[in-house]
Amino acid sequence: MGGAVRIGILGTGVVGQTLGGKLVELGHEVKLGSRTSANEKAAKWVGQHGSRASQGTFAEAASFGEMVFNCTSGMVSLEALRSGGSANLAGKVLVDVANPLDFSHGMPPTLSVCNSDSLGEQIQRAFPDAKVVKALNTMNAGVMVNPSSVPGDHDVFICGNDAGAKSQTSDLLRSFGWRTIVDLGDISGARGVEMLLPLWLRLMGTFKTATFNFHIART
View 1: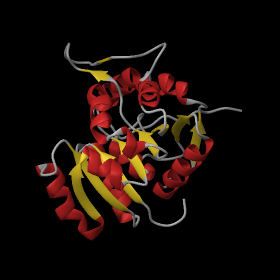
View 2: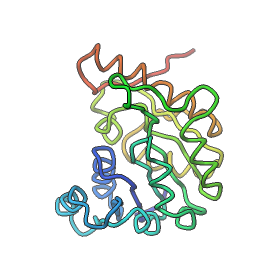
View 3: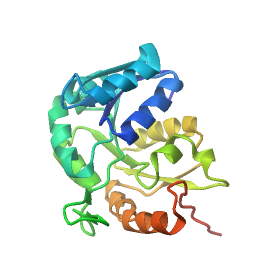
C-alpha cells in the first residue's frame, strides 16, 4: 500500500477511534462516520488528532474513503452500511472488523449468525460491488493497532474473495506492526473467525484482561 490514502471509518466507538487514531498517526487522512455529522464522540476524536482527521455521516465517510472500515456494532452493521450507500462502497476495499454479537439476552452475548453464514458474507452479498475483507475482529482494539502489546509472535486472520483487496489490507496491517497474517481464503472464512468470539470472551474472563491474542503453532 504505497503512500497515504483517504480512509473512511464507519463507527465512532473504541474500535473506530483507535483504528482511526493509528491511521492518522501513519499519515493517512481519516473521516470518522456516524449517523449524524455532529456526533460528539467523533468531534472530540477530531479535536485530538489534527488536520488529517475529520468527521461526517456514514455516507460522507464512505464517499471520502478510498478504503473503508466497518467498525460498527455487528447487529447494526448492514443498516449502517446501507446508510453509507452502495454507490459509495462500490469498487472499494471494505474491511469488516465487526462481530455479530447479540446482547439482547444479556451476558455473555450470543452470535446472531453462525455456522452456515457470517456477518462478513452478509455484507458481501448486500454490497456485491465492494471488496469485503474480514480482518482484526478476533482481538481487542489496542492489540489491533499495537501488536507488540502482546509478547511474542501472534496472528491476525484475514479472508475475502478479492486477492488484491486482501493484499492491500495486508500491507496496511504490516504498517501496524503485524508480522504473521493468516489468509483463510474466501469470505466464507469469516464464519470461523466470528465464531472465535465466544472463546475470546471466555478467555478474557479467565485472564482478567483483553490484552491477549491467538497464535497458531504448526510444523
